[in-house]
Image 1 (cartoon, one colour):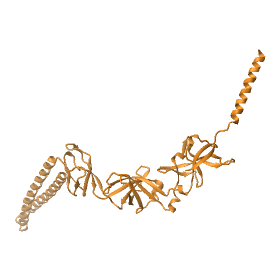
Image 2 (image 1 turned 120 degrees about the vertical axis):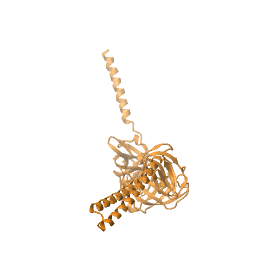
Image 3 (image 1 turned 180 degrees about the vertical axis):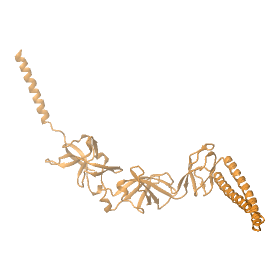
Image 4 (image 1 turned 135 degrees about the horizontal axis):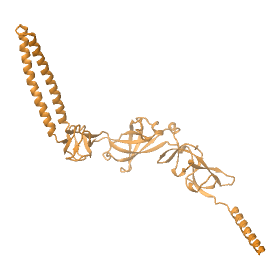
Length: 364
């Protein structure tokens, strides 16, 4: 019995050694990969940014006083001349206050006329020694007080007139209503936006650019603009305004003036802005690689570069940590970690590991 156990144990060990030998001899398949060589063509010389068209002049209009919105006189898109009343509040209470201030002003004018007449009469009597000094000073004081009352009444009348005029919302320039933000018969507070009013004709483009691009942009720089709704047409533009502050965001706003206006371009249309930088500026740009060529793990961001091996047609994948910049339409900007002439793997990174043997499929 003991001999049989030893025989079985020997057979099992033999099978195990044979299995290990087979696994050792089995070679891992060399994986074909797509690749890309980093060259000067990867330096960002031409950049594209998303933009949106907007009216050259646009204002959010609100009343300076509160009240009930009684009437909006125009519909969306209707052309309006500067100074035209766009909407008005119920002005009953403001009209009452104005009438009170007007009556107070008229009363003050009457008192001033009477006080002035009395003062001039006493002044003549005082000059001819027919009135005392106290009478003269009293008449003069009453006259000065009446003038002050007139000035106060005039100020109150002006304020009441302004309050009454503020119940009307006027067009600040020639244009049209692009958005209505309140409804008739609603209670409107002072300063609450009611309408967005846009100028007619000229349209400009607004876009945002990252920090590594803003330093290369100056006013007057020419750009190309394309609208998806206007096929086969590229519009010329010129940068007219550049913000030097992000306003808390990660990008900087810029305004582009359209050099060739078109009736087909309306406010709110999406577009693509293309900017080209010269060779001197290109040397300051970052290397760009496809987004699929970059992997991420707890160790950070990395790519796989390709180096030669001892076997002909076979290469070795080597992990290379990189520092990423912005994600653009062309891929990731690489601030650190790659150089020109490096070769990187552009697909299938989930099957890669440091040191794996690969072969190149085709340049892409």
